[in-house]
Length: 275
Length: 226
Image 1 (cartoon, rainbow over the protein chains, first blue to last red):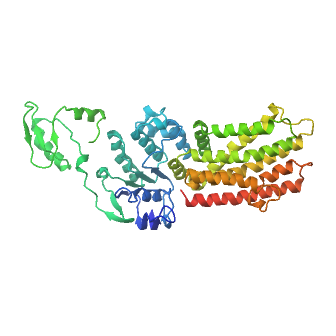
Image 2: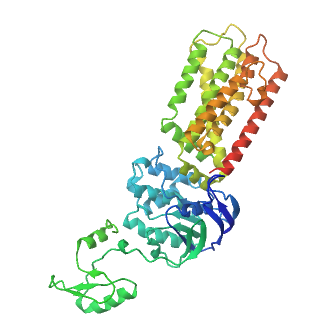
Image 3: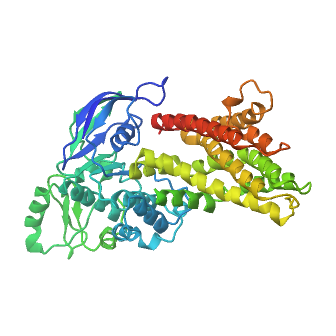
């Protein structure tokens, strides 16, 4: 898919939101669009999805099946989540039952009978994600897909992105939370001052990190610390369970490893949230 | 296309937005048939003219029921042309149901004079309603949020169009062809003699041309506005 000299503005007298955008996305590629609020990320994604038409220029070679997850799911509709997703499946020419696999996978089963307007923001966002995936899109557009999602659902996003790209599809997404660290191989675009340019992936924000406590046999401590660091995790200290007050700092990046804590239990049952 | 038509009709009917136009239809029918029985052609001619603004309003309400983002999701799912057409067809289904109810209602309250031949009058009544439905849908579509982008503009378009249809449709109007032949049809059906085939062909062609121009404008505006 190619953006060929795409310009866009909302109205004839409005300022240009995007100017002279030339870019291409190859099959199997994931593109992360970065930029401050109001820079034009959502506009670019909507142009890619075909929701908006360029004021000048053209978007070429868009795959025939597009899945678009808007930044805010339109929950003000008189349908239950299940009814809505079945109808969206029908809209795509699929059997309504084909929505059920996404209802299960995105953990929406308990909410199928809930009216869209009564859903929490995160659950509504998952409904938005499900409707985009029913048709197995060749181009998946995700506008801030992690916004409002719980921890378990967040881990699904990279999985889904990987599945779409593995099948030869393309994924375009915007992210201001630094979650794109979970998308290995993604290329980055920066939207600023109405123009688009390649960008380096941003470092994950310091406030968006969590501490996981794990327990290992005493003999495996050194090996575990080395392995975790090799995987890019920060290890800050090791605590001896037989002497709970004795904590040994470990030189290097931060994180601590302690057994049986509250966070570990929450992580195990999937209810923990990133801080 | 039919799943999208069904989805939009379901959204409109479940959301309760159908109530105001439904009440307006009852008021219109009460005014038309409250004064006693009339010949079928006369009654149905006025019924079609009086229903025109209500059907246009109902179309606008139906098209505006869906949130803008959902309309865009539908566009991504089925394509821009099908999305726009499905909205018009959903409005047409609803308008035809309203017309059928409006034509059946007077029989419950002896609103039709049955002492005269009914066949031609009823047939002309059906035609009058069929000639009113497409222009009403076109006006409602042009007043919808997808085109006007705001409540104030939408209401302005709707009210202006409804007033112009009456004012420019009056006998002796300087530019009757600027509006659909809603009033002209009502006049033709209330004359001493029922209109002949040439007059009906003229009214039908006039309505078809007007609708074609209005819907072309709607398609163009939808193309340029999301």
